[in-house]
Length: 380
Ligand SMILES: [Zn+2]
Image (cartoon, rainbow, N blue to C red; front, side, top):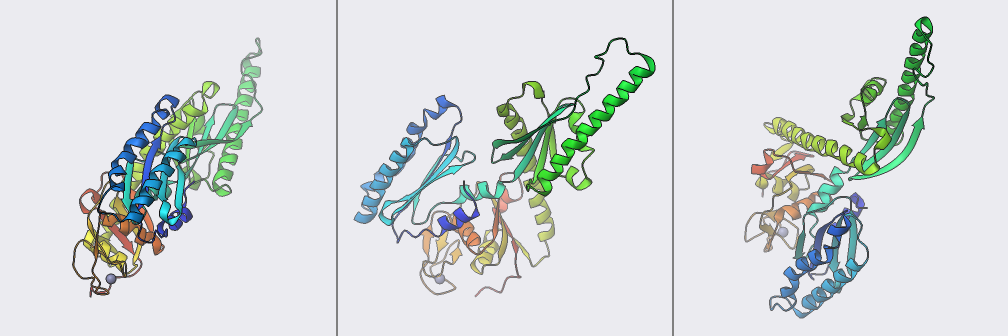
């Protein structure tokens, strides 16, 4: 599983100047689709095969790359689990990392002297744990949903009073039975709500999704403390009696995806609204690169699709869109295929957080924005 620590470790991999292959591929759940995986990986690898005989690379780099291709082909023989896979390989420097991803990235292969990590950042940042609760009038099942993966945690069965099971009870007696049934139903909701509260306060669940028929989910939610009600991002309709975990995962994930897109939009919009006039916020590539150069970025917002050619100083790590001389140290900056990827690595390196934004926001145009730890000093 990929986490912030894995990312920091990957960001610090040192290839000693040799090329490193970064490969991303989705691994389908469906066995038929998964059978096509070797073909898919081979077609990615074929894009870099010409480099093995390229005159542009020195012999060590070419030999290392040739072994990387073999190593990745061999790794593929292990069963890659559904979701996604990221592989970083630099044979010459003894680096081979094959990492399980909770959801599928886009097919991508990149050869550079540093690992290409952008797709991983979004996965790590997005990974919230959702509590999923499915209930009816007498039972409830509790799940955790993280990175699209649903795990079952527990089941609760409340004492159940069968309504109308005794023919011939009328009038007062029937009324009494109804009250009794209602009371037991409320007791069941309270018991479920108790477990939900525990999931949040003790197990560290971030947000909640409820499923069930009729009024059950909403009636139970009303028994929750106000602050926990606020964590419910949606409710779906499902009949507990014939709901499979796969179906529950699918319905809950739909609600979660929609919520996360909205949440991104809201977060970016709120940020952009406060950014004007603040000395702790910048929008746009030039300002954000400068902020990263002085390690001022607390949180980086970046459009998930954006890439931008730029330059990086090999001596001090200065990042820019262009320039022949590093303004920080005077060395000669080198071109990099995606300066935003270097930006992300630099922000992470200085302890900042990244939000990759998939939703349609002002970042489509501006590409990046950042909340700052301190106001920016004047440029040199
Ligand atoms: Zn420099």
